[in-house]
Length: 247
Image (cartoon, rainbow, N blue to C red):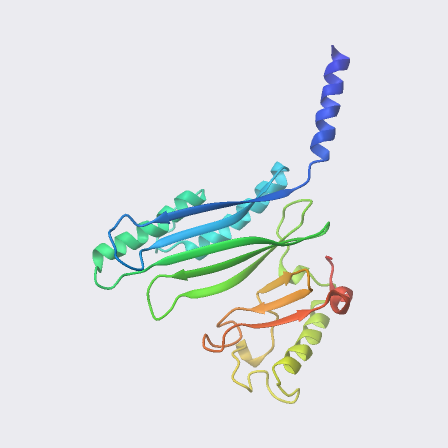
């Protein structure tokens, strides 16, 4: 009996060790209960959920949720929200509360969040969050967010941890940026109307691993005005692998 129990234990251990981290997309949607004719408030979140390896998956899922909560949550008071259903309900609830106070000034709130497994290797996982929100004003806000994870631990890898020498890569990227956007090496980086802080080139907040190469992506307002739109640089891996710690 003891031998049988031991064999079962080894079998379960073997199965557990051979499981691979996987992702399955799930969708969460909520509409306002208030009557409307056009531009009815709605929020949709379609997001990849990590599965199969509990500790790793839990770490990844918690990080993704916290980032989406920052994007979607609308309100002055911080409230405890533990899942996407509660998050979508909170967004619509904020609209309905605002509508009661200002019935002629609130309309058409929207939230659309779509997550995608952009890249996966033995060293790094990249989740791309494509998000759009509109809660009034002249226009909504659309952007991309890059979430990088260690596939063995599920821990977040931050952008400044990607490089063997960030200073060297930054100099390389600035040269390429100036060439693409036709900014003289003798001019300040903001000479053509860009908006880099302190008039100094910076790496973007979001760096993506893609099948085509390493993508540096500047969302609107990060390096240029909303009217000028986002800026981006794509480097084939054979040009940047010498700078990267994760491949």
